[in-house]
Amino acid sequence: MTQVSQFPGRPLLSGRPLLEVSQLVKRYDAGKPALDGISFSIRKGEFVSVIGPSGAGKSTLLRCINRMIEATSGEVSFEGASVGLLDRKNLKRLRSKIGMIFQHYNLVERLTVIENVLHGRLGAKSTLAGAAGHYSREEKRQATEVIAMLGLSDHLYQRCDRLSGGQKQRVGIARALLQDPRMILCDEPIASLDPNASRNIMEQLKRFSQEMDIALIVNLHQVNVACKYSDRILGVNAGRLVFDGRPEELTPEKISQIYGAESRSLTAELGEQYAS
Amino acid sequence: MTALQQIPGRPLRKEKVVIRLLLLGLAGTTIYALATLDFGGIDMAEAVRDTLANLKIIFLHPGGPRLSFLSALEEVIITLGLAFLTTLFGGIIALFLGLLGAQNLSPKPVTVVVMALVALIRAVPTILWVLIFAVAAGLGSTAAVVGMTFHSISYLTKAYAESFEDLDRSVIEALKASGANWWQIVFQAVIPSSFSYLLSWTFLRFEINFANAVAMGAAAGASGVGFDLFMASGFYFDLREVGLITYIILAFAMALEAAATRAKGRIKHAG
Ligand SMILES: Nc1ncnc2c1ncn2[C@@H]1O[C@H](COP(=O)(O)OP(=O)(O)O)[C@@H](O)[C@H]1O
Ligand SMILES: [Mg+2]
Picture 1 (cartoon, rainbow over the protein chains, first blue to last red):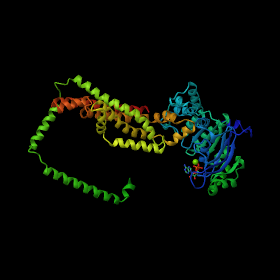
Picture 2: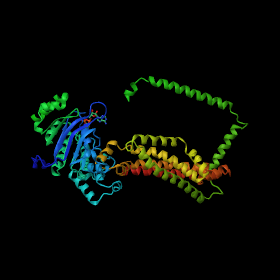
Picture 3: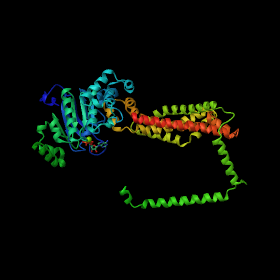
Picture 4: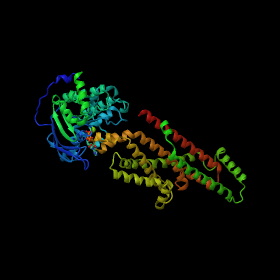
């Protein structure tokens, strides 16, 4: 956790962006689109939070990036390749380079910690080797190492349904890290956790983002958490990007623009945060 | 609970009336049938006495001149083999059908077709399937194996599909998002995670198939201990042998039950 302070500033521009999203539109049904022309880009190793009221389209946005949801129009390109044009095999390869963690962890609860973490290697394997569960010695070593980094060594062979929420989320992070990803998409990673566990998870994420140069896109509910950990914040309201800037630029006016009617209580909360 | 009790029982009252009327009707017809039944000049008291005497021979003096204990054991093993074979065939085929029938693994139209088909097969009793296949294969072990396998497939497909559905759709989404494909998810997440359920259901079906195999031996001439029971009772009228065979079947059924219970317990503790 000391690492966080060791890397105060990062080079602002380092060549091509890792991810470019342009004019992304997602329409689920005839009504209002869930995403309405969103454009932004993410650099290597950047920590970006996405904030906005519930139903704004944050989860949809994340899932359009790795095509868990097919966008209606617009373009996503990752490492220079257009994601929308990938065939099945290359989509598998793309997904194996992008980790994902979730509010409800989405682990196979009846399997052990190490089994769940090793699942992170499946995307890099052939269908047969993966289905047969043929993990190399090196992969197992990496898995135990990542688990150790997250402080779960004592629970290596424990079933995941016996773990606490914070521990489960750390298993989720370990699974994503074992993919050796360039980017991790996090959909409300701390929404089900208590404040202590939340802080721990956010610090772990920050640390891996910096030490391993992994870009993070984190959907968050709490503005103060977003401000504390992010290099940049995206504000989404009703499927539109209404804010894209550094945490310092996020003024109360901007917050009320992002959150609309919900904003009053949130700015109050933020004020308290700054006051304390 | 208290909240439930406070809800007035009005919608239930109507049902109660219907059930009471139905029971009354059934009681009436039963009494009428008994009163007007043609006993054909049988003395009821004597008939009951004879039946009890027969039961006494069967259960208190088992044994038989024709069937040695060893050959009886051999016949039981044939019956067990029949049960094992049909459970194995049924299990393997049901595993794949179960994957196609599980809502978290297959597209909706496929699951609907598979589950409807399987429900249709299950609705017809095992013995009827055996008789249907006997048209092509002739009465005997082939028809019994095919017919019993058929019914096992439908039973196990439903059980397996429901076990697979225990793994949340969002977990499968998570693995897909990491680049894993369908086969990898099935063999690395779905099956390992539902393994203890699959095993329990398969054991359960094995027990059912053992009972079925006994019946098939008698009804479809599929050999095994069921056929001996049929011959002893229907052909030789040897009550003592019927008793012996019944005890042997009972012993095996109980051993099976005990083994299944222990296996299930072991899975639970290990898991
Ligand atoms: N599968 C779906 N089918 C139809 N509408 C959906 C679906 N998923 C999300 N939506 C709608 O899209 C909008 C954005 O949802 P979502 O991306 O989940 O927002 P957020 O994550 O910001 O809370 C909401 O109005 C929601 O009702
Ligand atoms: Mg969401």
